[in-house]
Amino acid sequence: DAGITQSPRHKVTETGTPVTLRCHQTENHRYMYWYRQDPGHGLRLIHYSYGVKDTDKGEVSDGYSVSRSKTEDFLLTLESATSSQTSVYFCAISEEGIPEAFFGQGTRLTVV
Amino acid sequence: GNSVTQMEGPVTLSEEAFLTINCTYTATGYPSLFWYVQYPGEGLQLLLKATKADDKGSNKGFEATYRKETTSFHLEKGSVQVSDSAVYFCALMPDTGRRALTFGSGTRLQVQP
Image (cartoon, rainbow over all chains, first blue to last red):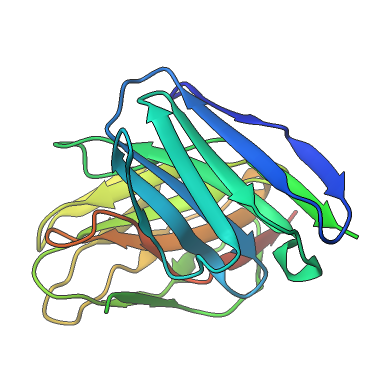
Protein backbone atom coordinates (compact mmCIF):
# COMPACT_ATOMS: atom_id res chain seq x y z
CA ASP A 1 0.00 0.00 0.00
CA ALA A 2 1.10 3.53 -0.76
CA GLY A 3 2.31 5.33 2.36
CA ILE A 4 -0.47 7.84 2.89
CA THR A 5 -1.72 8.78 6.33
CA GLN A 6 -4.68 11.00 6.97
CA SER A 7 -5.39 12.56 10.35
CA PRO A 8 -7.67 12.68 12.12
CA ARG A 9 -9.71 9.73 10.89
CA HIS A 10 -12.89 11.01 12.49
CA LYS A 11 -13.86 14.46 13.70
CA VAL A 12 -16.99 16.15 14.96
CA THR A 13 -16.90 19.93 15.04
CA GLU A 14 -19.28 22.81 15.52
CA THR A 15 -20.54 25.16 12.85
CA GLY A 16 -18.31 28.20 12.47
CA THR A 17 -15.12 26.65 13.83
CA PRO A 18 -11.96 26.23 11.75
CA VAL A 19 -10.84 22.67 11.02
CA THR A 20 -7.58 21.38 9.55
CA LEU A 21 -7.13 17.94 8.05
CA ARG A 22 -3.68 16.57 7.41
CA CYS A 23 -2.35 14.27 4.71
CA HIS A 24 1.13 12.85 5.05
CA GLN A 25 2.90 10.76 2.40
CA THR A 26 6.13 8.80 2.48
CA GLU A 27 6.33 8.18 -1.30
CA ASN A 28 7.87 11.51 -2.32
CA HIS A 29 5.18 11.92 -5.00
CA ARG A 30 4.87 15.32 -6.64
CA TYR A 31 1.08 15.57 -6.85
CA MET A 32 -1.28 15.59 -3.90
CA TYR A 33 -5.05 16.00 -3.89
CA TRP A 34 -8.00 16.53 -1.59
CA TYR A 35 -11.36 15.07 -2.60
CA ARG A 36 -14.67 14.92 -0.85
CA GLN A 37 -17.07 11.99 -1.18
CA ASP A 38 -20.81 12.51 -0.97
CA PRO A 39 -23.66 10.14 -1.89
CA GLY A 40 -24.66 10.51 -5.52
CA HIS A 41 -21.63 12.63 -6.39
CA GLY A 42 -18.74 10.22 -6.33
CA LEU A 43 -15.52 12.00 -5.44
CA ARG A 44 -15.10 15.65 -6.25
CA LEU A 45 -11.81 17.52 -6.32
CA ILE A 46 -11.43 20.29 -3.74
CA HIS A 47 -7.80 21.38 -4.25
CA TYR A 48 -4.65 19.86 -5.56
CA SER A 49 -0.93 20.50 -5.41
CA TYR A 50 1.68 20.03 -8.12
CA GLY A 51 4.67 20.83 -5.91
CA VAL A 52 5.76 22.55 -2.73
CA LYS A 53 3.84 25.83 -2.42
CA ASP A 54 2.14 25.14 -5.80
CA THR A 55 -1.59 24.60 -5.44
CA ASP A 56 -4.72 25.11 -7.48
CA LYS A 57 -8.47 24.95 -7.03
CA GLY A 58 -10.69 22.05 -7.93
CA GLU A 59 -14.38 22.04 -8.71
CA VAL A 60 -15.64 22.46 -5.12
CA SER A 61 -13.06 24.74 -3.52
CA ASP A 62 -15.34 27.37 -1.92
CA GLY A 63 -14.86 27.44 1.86
CA TYR A 64 -11.61 25.47 1.74
CA SER A 65 -7.95 26.43 1.65
CA VAL A 66 -4.81 24.31 1.40
CA SER A 67 -1.12 24.56 2.09
CA ARG A 68 1.89 22.50 1.15
CA SER A 69 5.11 23.64 2.77
CA LYS A 70 6.85 20.26 2.45
CA THR A 71 6.66 17.54 -0.19
CA GLU A 72 5.21 15.07 2.28
CA ASP A 73 2.42 17.15 3.86
CA PHE A 74 -0.75 18.62 2.37
CA LEU A 75 -3.15 20.40 4.71
CA LEU A 76 -6.80 21.12 4.07
CA THR A 77 -8.44 23.87 6.13
CA LEU A 78 -12.11 24.60 6.47
CA GLU A 79 -12.01 28.24 7.41
CA SER A 80 -15.43 28.29 9.07
CA ALA A 81 -17.09 24.90 9.00
CA THR A 82 -20.68 24.58 7.78
CA SER A 83 -23.08 21.64 7.83
CA SER A 84 -22.72 21.31 4.04
CA GLN A 85 -19.08 20.38 4.62
CA THR A 86 -20.08 17.23 6.49
CA SER A 87 -18.48 14.60 4.28
CA VAL A 88 -15.77 12.02 3.93
CA TYR A 89 -12.49 13.57 2.82
CA PHE A 90 -9.85 11.65 0.90
CA CYS A 91 -6.28 12.55 0.19
CA ALA A 92 -4.57 11.11 -2.87
CA ILE A 93 -1.09 11.20 -4.39
CA SER A 94 0.33 10.61 -7.84
CA GLU A 95 3.57 10.96 -9.74
CA GLU A 96 4.79 11.66 -13.24
CA GLY A 97 4.94 8.52 -15.32
CA ILE A 98 2.39 6.71 -13.13
CA PRO A 99 -1.11 7.12 -14.55
CA GLU A 100 -3.08 6.29 -11.41
CA ALA A 101 -3.50 7.98 -8.04
CA PHE A 102 -3.30 6.32 -4.63
CA PHE A 103 -5.69 7.11 -1.83
CA GLY A 104 -5.58 7.46 1.91
CA GLN A 105 -8.12 5.85 4.23
CA GLY A 106 -10.28 8.94 4.52
CA THR A 107 -11.42 11.34 7.23
CA ARG A 108 -15.05 11.39 8.25
CA LEU A 109 -15.96 14.96 9.24
CA THR A 110 -19.27 15.85 10.85
CA VAL A 111 -20.22 19.49 11.33
CA VAL A 112 -23.00 19.98 13.89
CA GLY B 1 -14.55 19.76 -19.30
CA ASN B 2 -13.96 16.14 -18.45
CA SER B 3 -16.77 13.96 -17.14
CA VAL B 4 -17.55 10.33 -16.34
CA THR B 5 -21.00 8.76 -16.35
CA GLN B 6 -21.66 5.37 -14.84
CA MET B 7 -24.81 3.41 -14.29
CA GLU B 8 -26.93 4.07 -11.25
CA GLY B 9 -27.03 1.50 -8.52
CA PRO B 10 -27.50 -0.41 -6.46
CA VAL B 11 -26.91 -3.50 -8.54
CA THR B 12 -28.04 -6.65 -6.77
CA LEU B 13 -26.87 -10.03 -8.09
CA SER B 14 -26.80 -13.59 -6.93
CA GLU B 15 -23.46 -15.29 -6.40
CA GLU B 16 -21.92 -16.60 -9.65
CA ALA B 17 -23.96 -14.20 -11.81
CA PHE B 18 -22.39 -12.15 -14.61
CA LEU B 19 -21.65 -8.52 -13.83
CA THR B 20 -21.56 -5.50 -16.12
CA ILE B 21 -21.26 -1.92 -14.88
CA ASN B 22 -21.39 0.62 -17.68
CA CYS B 23 -19.06 3.62 -17.82
CA THR B 24 -18.76 6.30 -20.50
CA TYR B 25 -16.55 9.35 -20.49
CA THR B 26 -16.08 12.75 -22.08
CA ALA B 27 -12.55 14.05 -22.46
CA THR B 28 -10.26 15.48 -25.09
CA GLY B 29 -7.19 13.60 -26.17
CA TYR B 30 -6.33 10.20 -24.76
CA PRO B 31 -7.04 9.94 -21.04
CA SER B 32 -6.10 6.97 -18.92
CA LEU B 33 -9.10 5.10 -17.55
CA PHE B 34 -9.56 3.36 -14.22
CA TRP B 35 -11.88 1.37 -12.06
CA TYR B 36 -11.50 1.88 -8.33
CA VAL B 37 -13.25 -0.19 -5.66
CA GLN B 38 -14.29 0.88 -2.18
CA TYR B 39 -15.12 -1.77 0.40
CA PRO B 40 -17.25 -0.72 3.41
CA GLY B 41 -15.42 1.65 5.72
CA GLU B 42 -12.29 1.76 3.58
CA GLY B 43 -10.54 4.02 1.12
CA LEU B 44 -10.37 3.57 -2.64
CA GLN B 45 -8.25 0.84 -4.14
CA LEU B 46 -7.22 0.67 -7.76
CA LEU B 47 -8.93 -2.32 -9.34
CA LEU B 48 -7.69 -2.03 -12.93
CA LYS B 49 -6.54 0.48 -15.51
CA ALA B 50 -6.03 1.04 -19.22
CA THR B 51 -3.86 3.77 -20.67
CA LYS B 52 -4.58 3.62 -24.41
CA ALA B 53 -7.29 2.67 -26.85
CA ASP B 54 -8.08 -1.08 -27.10
CA ASP B 55 -6.11 -1.85 -23.94
CA LYS B 56 -7.79 -4.34 -21.63
CA GLY B 57 -7.27 -3.93 -17.91
CA SER B 58 -7.82 -6.96 -15.71
CA ASN B 59 -7.51 -7.93 -12.06
CA LYS B 60 -9.18 -10.42 -9.69
CA GLY B 61 -11.41 -11.70 -12.50
CA PHE B 62 -12.62 -8.21 -13.44
CA GLU B 63 -12.00 -6.83 -16.94
CA ALA B 64 -12.59 -3.59 -18.81
CA THR B 65 -11.62 -2.58 -22.35
CA TYR B 66 -10.78 1.00 -23.38
CA ARG B 67 -13.08 1.73 -26.33
CA LYS B 68 -12.14 5.05 -27.90
CA GLU B 69 -14.83 4.87 -30.60
CA THR B 70 -17.63 4.58 -28.04
CA THR B 71 -15.81 6.47 -25.24
CA SER B 72 -16.56 3.60 -22.89
CA PHE B 73 -14.82 1.50 -20.25
CA HIS B 74 -17.39 -1.03 -19.03
CA LEU B 75 -16.51 -3.26 -16.07
CA GLU B 76 -17.27 -6.98 -16.36
CA LYS B 77 -16.84 -10.10 -14.27
CA GLY B 78 -17.99 -13.54 -15.29
CA SER B 79 -18.92 -14.89 -11.86
CA VAL B 80 -19.31 -12.57 -8.88
CA GLN B 81 -18.77 -13.56 -5.27
CA VAL B 82 -20.24 -12.20 -2.05
CA SER B 83 -16.83 -10.69 -1.32
CA ASP B 84 -17.18 -8.48 -4.43
CA SER B 85 -19.88 -6.45 -2.69
CA ALA B 86 -18.56 -2.90 -2.72
CA VAL B 87 -18.88 0.46 -4.45
CA TYR B 88 -17.18 0.71 -7.84
CA PHE B 89 -15.99 4.00 -9.32
CA CYS B 90 -15.02 4.67 -12.91
CA ALA B 91 -12.46 7.47 -13.33
CA LEU B 92 -10.23 9.15 -15.87
CA MET B 93 -6.88 10.95 -15.73
CA PRO B 94 -6.40 13.36 -18.65
CA ASP B 95 -3.25 13.35 -20.75
CA THR B 96 -3.19 17.16 -20.96
CA GLY B 97 -4.12 20.03 -18.67
CA ARG B 98 -4.84 19.56 -14.99
CA ARG B 99 -3.47 16.25 -13.75
CA ALA B 100 -6.31 15.07 -11.54
CA LEU B 101 -8.79 12.21 -11.55
CA THR B 102 -12.40 12.83 -12.56
CA PHE B 103 -14.82 10.28 -11.08
CA GLY B 104 -18.21 8.88 -11.90
CA SER B 105 -20.83 8.85 -9.16
CA GLY B 106 -20.15 5.25 -8.15
CA THR B 107 -22.18 2.04 -8.40
CA ARG B 108 -22.95 -0.04 -5.34
CA LEU B 109 -22.86 -3.79 -5.97
CA GLN B 110 -24.54 -6.18 -3.59
CA VAL B 111 -23.98 -9.89 -4.14
CA GLN B 112 -26.33 -12.27 -2.36
CA PRO B 113 -25.38 -15.87 -1.47
